[in-house]
Image (cartoon, rainbow, N blue to C red):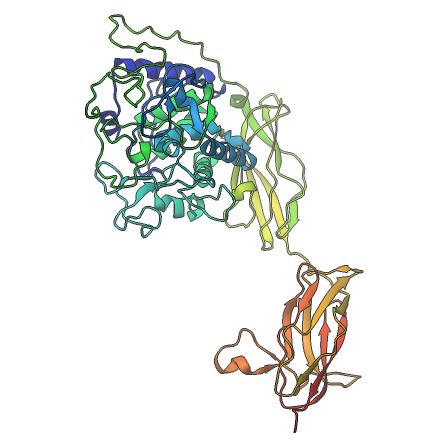
Length: 601
């Protein structure tokens, strides 16, 4: 795949110099634990063995410009759409797309703070995968105005993935295609995620998981990048996360370049005004990943100049900004970095590499803090969270060490974001505290494990118990109306004729169980009546659905303690009959039902 990508990206001595500068900048700007990019060290990162997120599809985005990304002072107009800036305009991110990246990073940070996901990384991937949703061509909700489709994954230069979604997302009934601004393949979006579930996410809270929506796609991408307890401030984890998207060294270098570029600074531009990637085949907008064409994506585009243009002829009046690193690549200052000036391009001054922190490497022991096991009622949050202290061989606290808390997959308990595994770092006192844990709906016991990431220290186990919720109590039942209840024999009472309110110690009793029985009028020992008013079994079918039922169980009050009884029918008997309602806590309410004989009988 690396050779394929090299054919599609313009390369040369100048672009090599640009890459070196950008990667050197990235190295200097990373957190202390992520000081050297694998590519910069000459090491080849190992791509993951499974199918990449985007299916290994093509992409068409060049490296970022060298100059500092500040808002452009001037723009030019192509005559075929909104004006776009050159050079520094690459730092302009469409408003909705930028909001999606920041919202996704914030959401991931809430449920997986140990991942340290920067929104600029999502922006780097979004740039490479779709040119920031084709320059921000999205509606107010963040959904792309036209589908962004990658090439057909038919095994010719890409992964071989036969259709998995019936064309639901990509419109292809034979093979899958990567879809949306973050280019997920349908099979990965729907069912390729952890625990057999898909990576798809609902980032804008509309109740849908749509890969064509930039909020949903950005959150899904953030979840994937942080999977497996990754800490993206660690270069190895960062490399593996990006390679999981597309297993190509060239792809890794390109994403890291844009990541470094966006970390220097960005500015917001209106939706639809972002810089479009150009694949130089004369079509005007990039296809595949770069520009998200909506038609046939099976034919790779060549890096040939557009008709009527020659390499190096870009600039004002052409309608397309020059690219740094290739012939005629302007940096926005009027000169060509690495161009034919007769002088070799100046080498960037190397910056000192900061030393990684030493504290995590000295960790030898994890100790449990607190000796009480954890417990919670079903469906509620645990009052306390698992906590451990990291120590070195001398017994001193170790700060900044990554600790992973893991739940068994069989339990219904979850950390925020529905996660079963989270990674947090120890504070200055060596303490690592898991996020708030929520119990599942079923009662039972399970074990939480805390492990030091990258160390062989013994794990720490925490016992946790989920207790069943006690049944809601109700010590009093009252009718909400004093209207007399009457009907004619052979007919039914009015719909929702009987409504009652349950209370406990004077307060509403939501969820209280109530039993309704048609009883005889024996004052000493009322029994179920065999005649008069009756219910019908709502679960019955066929001939049984009209059979009289004179006792109903499983009735519960709503959130306000109210209960409306099902429809009440009558047989041929006339008279006054009794309906008795009871609760487990001794509340009893007897209601009179009057049945009149038919007229003329």
